[in-house]
Length: 405
Image 1 (cartoon, helix red, strand yellow):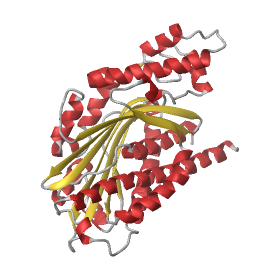
Image 2 (cartoon, helix red, strand yellow):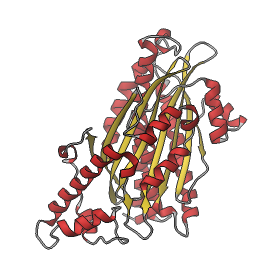
Image 3 (tube, rainbow, N blue to C red):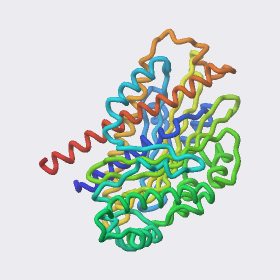
Image 4 (tube, one colour):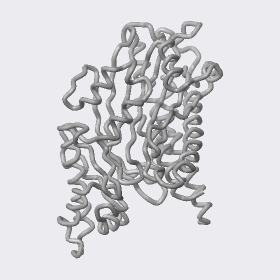
């Protein structure tokens, strides 16, 4: 299997799982509505519903809207006591999470240049930028960014590497500031290869085809389309940069996570949308929705259905062998996400059996049910990040074996 396909597998697993947790993954709806969403948007069968109720994680591919697109969703029913989650997940994340993420940080609103100060390109990235031209560049950049690199960096000077580093941070800062002022109209146009990719056209298409969001939370969908001019009580926005080491190329990512908290049919609910604003490699665009629907089982105990859906478009899927590559990636991502959901279920259900019913019952008013929902969102992110890290490490070892190193 070509190395670049394996690298794409790693990236998609990381994006799908780590980005999902960037804003805490939760939501809640009545069971019947949730089943209707799975039936309509993911074509769940009776057998898959039965598997879900038996406690199995179910992962499905979604219809792609573009030849570059990989689309999928995963669902699991969870039950557990958050009192036991923090210690187990935090310990696991401490051991494994830092092996993939090289750095990252929150970007303020409004942003400040200091928010990106820790971001530094490696020498290979700088050398790639040195040779960039519009339509021929190994880093995803706009024509304006390429022009600035060519005109504002003295590539003949001994100190061109730190100069390129500073300019790259400045360009990302300018980009974030423009996005916070104009929203999707400011999204980047990649001109690194023939045929520009316009993110301001890609993201609305992805948003329109995400399950649940447009039909069951239209006010949140409208908010996302209208950001930053739109207003919606209960929404928290976080912009984040990260540098991820996968394969031989570190990737710089900018993401916007919008977390929406509401009461839906008198039950607390949180929906999280994570949008890619920029990536230096591989991803043309990516958008995910994470929610946790809560219900009460036949014994009156709280259960939660975690749904994660992602649509990502990758530049390597548009060529002659794109269909074959897509199938390989879809298989790997489905297996990885299924393992993540199943391990999440096992970990969350390892809590003490004598947990307070009053703290777990979703229908309760007051802090008990709300604290359970918010707590579970936080800990699910830790679990997803942990397993994503393990999968990435396993795939990386396989790469090394394939190369004979």
